[in-house]
Length: 340
Image (tube, one colour):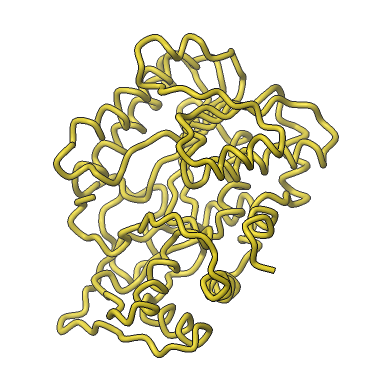
């Protein structure tokens, strides 16, 4: 049952709500930075939603595409692929004019020691893209890392909380937002800032990170005692539906699950499914803050996620027990000093 094809089917089958919204989107869609962890299934989901809605749209995916599995999925589903390094001088001018843009390009891991590359990818490139697609509607993938740490009992940062990023990755991600904000104010570009915390795909994610410690017999760290997460299929649906809430000046949306998830509880639940009692790395002084987003606005606009937290935990264990492929890209959700 738990094959790569089955997982991709789960992640790329559109809901009735997405199908209806995609039918109302005017024009084609280009996804910039589509070769990462979420991009391939987002592009495939867009194609499937258009087919289900009976509308004909070009779905164009742009990236360097280093993952052959991602390329195979996109070709199979009928996504148009443009392979390029968007950092190369002048290449953005080669891209077609498209009225709808999903911007997913960014750099996080490897920042520590190569901060200049992260700032170039996260701030300089967005300024070029914002200028190139100034006449388009743009959904900008961002991160909950733009927020300060929140008290674990305060429900997480909502969209009214002022940014307070910790570390160069978080600061450069805020810089990305500011570049697109500039375009939105200056050119009237409709923009939505999509602040994600954290997507679960089974091949990677916070639940995978916790489960890997359990399987290896390592203590599960509780540096940050709580976390947010959302099924990647739901997160991708929200990204596409955000094309309808782009505004000038830019709108902002937190994207995550509605729960404040106890890391200790998640480890215990995963252990039950894996048949292994987890080792919990208890802390002498329990930290009372964590990186947390409040998803109330998202749930009001688009409804609650279709895949529950308990379902994600069960699926994660089943995927690992079946020997499912892993991306080996830990989230480092427990990082508190902003060093990636």
